[in-house]
Length: 135
Image 1 (cartoon, helix red, strand yellow):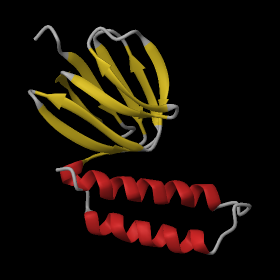
Image 2: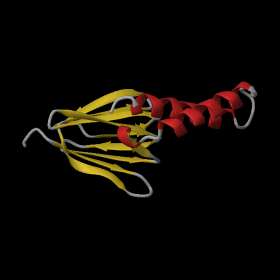
Image 3: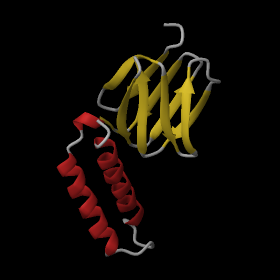
Image 4: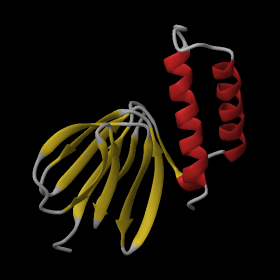
């Protein structure tokens, strides 16, 4: 289809997804952005959040970690630490991770060395729980 866009989602372990899609929405560090075929080329950083794409009129959701996205007029390549499709997320494990991060953050101050790492863990857990609901 002429309006399709190639999307590749790649983690250090594997190619998570590679196919033509209609559009993709990505959580950038400067804010969420969408890409359609013919988009202006650019390179940007990806933040922890929800990535989704539309293929054949159906929306698919992923919880993603930090990384980078390269956009051209016909292809989007996303290189990220982790990516979990909504129907593959273990909700119980994500809830435990959220509770653990909240508990540990409650015992820290912003000056603690581990504070930012634990804050990111909480953000990842909350995102995973939110995305898991969008199956």
